[in-house]
Image 1 (cartoon, helix red, strand yellow):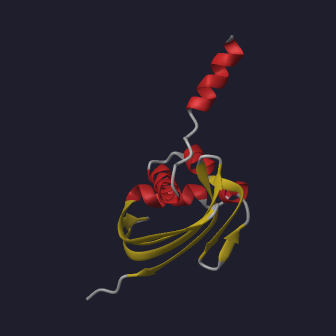
Image 2 (cartoon, one colour; image 1 turned 120 degrees about the vertical axis):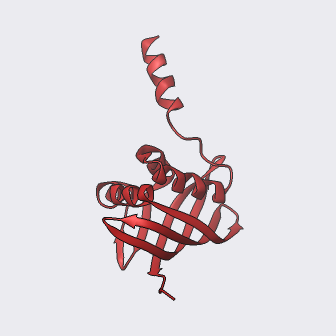
Length: 143
């Protein structure tokens, strides 16, 4: 009985896979911004590839060991506003593209940037997992 109770608690703590690719990306960004590390990782395929600023992380474990905590810290200290969004689906594969404006302060420096995100997701059962992310950004020039 004790083992069953532990199993139920463990399962209850996992995020449900989102029903659509866009909902999956929303849940991923929300988990990062709220500092919910395990929830964010649960939405990534174990073999996810993440491209950012000319670098690549080739697995969920590599991302967790390197940039995940920095991404969480950045998103917790800044505010992102969605400017544009598009989703395309073909069978069990989807692409979600977003353009955001991020403002705030990070590491004692002002932040005002336009971000671009391309995500490739694959359907797994009733939900979607992120298999590829490509992030890029540029500073907004002062007028």
